[in-house]
Amino acid sequence: MDAAFTEEQHEIRRTLRELLLKRCGPDEVKAAVRTPPGYDTQLWQQLAGRLGLPGLALPTAYGGVGCGPTELALACEETGRAVLPSPLIATAALAAPLILALGSERQRAALLPALAAGELTATLAVPGGRLATALALTGPNDGGWAGGGRAGGIQARRVPQECAAVPSTNGGPPAGGGWRLYGEAGQVLNGHTADVLVVAAHTGGFAHSRTLLFLVRAAADGGAARSGAESAVPGLLRTRQTALDETRPQARLELREVPAELLGEGDGDEAAVAGALAATGVTAAAALAAEAVGAADTALARTVAHVQQREQFGRPIGSFQAVQHRLADLYVRLQAARSAAYYAAWSAGGGPSAPEGAAGPYGAAEPGVGALALAQALETLRAVAAEAVQLHGGIGFTWEHEAHLYFKRAACDELLLGPVHRLRARAAEEAGLFPDGAGEPGGSGEPAGAPGRAAAMAAVEA
Image (cartoon, rainbow, N blue to C red; front, top):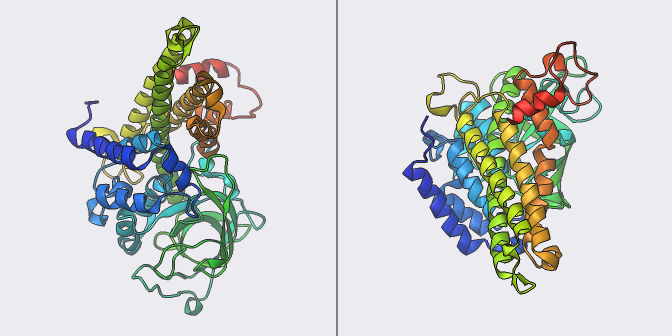
């Protein structure tokens, strides 16, 4: 294994960093999150057109750059440094891998080139706020994580073919596709602006319920997606929700007989859907971990610069040993989290010799590696952000200072794909450290002779 980055990977990082330094300072971030989309659409088009950012991990056959999760993670690390508000995670780490893994050739050809070019954005909608479970990061995704049965979640039903398809005017797939969706999903990442929604829904009735994925063209008229009552799709109401971290906008989706198309061919395969979601979860965890590492790196660098300038008792506060120890501990944690994030991204791509026919859009990852890397990165960002607020003194608590951007990002990222203790518990389960489900949260003890929970978790972290 050669852990060194290639010149192309270094160039991706350098180019993106230079652009974001010019266009995405703290003031620009605060202004962008107050716009209706929640991000700078012109900057997003520049990142997509000039750098091919949303298509980094997509094959060249579908208009992508032809790289993989490692390059996507490096890009996310740079966007994390600037706390960039953008649909990158929702589009490139959640929706696009699922379309690539499960979509028919027609669906791929119609959607992936537009996503790679930044002409469309996409997201994954999972009812009940169970995104982390759906991606198999905090628990197995083989149960009723999407609501279940007739009560709750999102339900999908077939409609007669003669009244199903609504032709698309932009060359994409039909807006109808023979299905109608009914239900509600909250906390959908970039759900109020995404042009393509990948929706998890139940079908088959109560007795034979199964969870499949469906495509909803939220911009069926070929234009940009619109929210609320102005939605271009009949029956679809999208409302942006108030979030602690404004740089990570979320929305509530209400679907009332919304036309949809099954993602894939035939009648759908629930096992294939679960496998694709789990593989996507590894990629998303690696990308989010890298983004958290980038945010922590910048927060720590700005804190170090502050303590070197701020004087107390006639000397810089950075000269006090207690402050130096705190910063040194943060630096060690940051480097460990960065190494784990890089390894998770490398593993998500199947490593240098991914087996042919490996499950998922990229390759076979090691069990639990994405969840562990994400847990470590989230804990690191939370610790660095908290120390940044404290060591900046009174100014660190003010709205005008950028320290609150990193603190809010740390708090909300754990709600998005966490919490940390469940990420670690799930990784331990996948590694076989908890036999017979003894390590599940809320479990009823351990079988005789089984390793203790504390010892198992220590082994995982080691």
